[in-house]
Image 1 (spheres, helix red, strand yellow):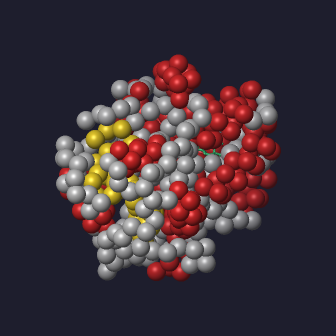
Image 2: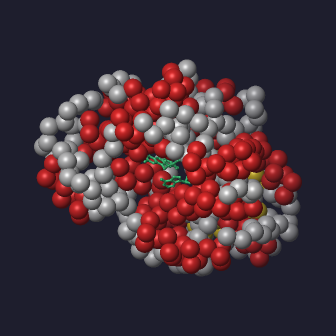
Image 3: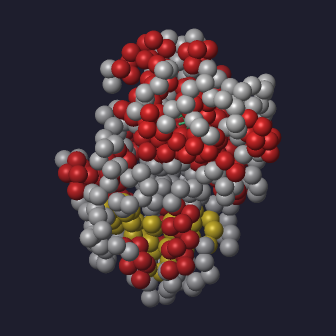
Length: 458
Ligand SMILES: Cc1cc2nc3c(=O)[nH]c(=O)nc-3n(C[C@H](O)[C@H](O)[C@H](O)COP(=O)(O)OP(=O)(O)OC[C@H]3O[C@@H](n4cnc5c(N)ncnc54)[C@H](O)[C@@H]3O)c2cc1C
């Protein structure tokens, strides 16, 4: 049942009149400000004259759980504890290390709660979490959309491409691109007793906590990107002051620090797109650069969220339009000039130095430069035994190594390499009418030797 443009009630249970608190289960919007889910939880707590408890858990068994992802998430915990303390809100963080650790913590917390508020994120494991808790808990579960600037509910079907969603966003934007108004709780909950295990996290304990978890320890924490809202804001400040003025040109130069590198902060919700967009709007930079950036941050990003919200097949080639299926059928058995196994690709062991460099950047740092991501994806299509194998390899590598993986942009970005949100181009072998790219021509548009050398030193 839809309550408003950002909030849906996922079940039809009654509020527990004996509940001692309102529970906000924070899953994806890992921040204490600019968060519509938090605001909704505060409002519900105040209406019910109850304190608010914020719960954030990190389990060991989600797909691709690794030192890299765990570290990035844990780096944002201590600062949230401090922020919530200032707000008079009890914040509980719990790290479930392995199968011997206590489980079902949300269900346990729900027993004493009047109502649950949680994050409405349209892909990966979150829709399943929300479905299960709304069935299991005996209280209402409200899922709140704080993903983008325009609420996802403003688009009631899947958009075909950027050109179809852009005019709609442009029309709606003045209603949403305005200062976020924070609210506060009326009842302090800092001393509230709750039935839930809790993990204390400090900068000094992160490495040992991660080492104790039953996760993939082969994907190391990033030395380049550090989690948390403070780190995200530091990067945002640098981007706005030093890089944005030239973004229009610099973003297509992987050999330069020329894009925002904020996608991991946006993915984990350490930063809200509204906060980022507001800083861009107010920046002292040429309008072309601001427009170019807002096109990516708003139009392209919200198109991806729209796709995962409305297309249940977003994690497969089935999400592609009919013209792509037709051309893939016609070219499925074309001879591939080079064929690499998923293992060779993962090892960055191909004949193509630029491609290997992209792969190396991702494996070593946890991100790949925006400009070469499409080239990376297109080549895997050309070098895999089938389109299906190419898709699976891309999703696996992207989600395993990228901090910003497992996001609507991950699925839309990979599908874009196969023609999603694009149009047919000139026909050729293997790709059919799917747009084609080569390292040779792409590598001439920037100093690819410098980029390759940089990744060799990582
Ligand atoms: C094969 C492939 C895989 C991708 N995987 C991911 C992924 O896992 N996670 C992810 O966030 N993005 C992904 N993208 C989209 C895009 O490449 C990244 O968002 C971008 O590289 C992030 O770098 P940045 O923050 O410096 O971008 P900037 O150029 O600074 O752009 C600002 C913000 O706009 C958004 N954005 C930029 N480009 C796109 C785009 N093409 N589509 C949607 N939103 C965009 C991002 O949130 C980004 O942080 C993928 C693209 C491709 C082609």
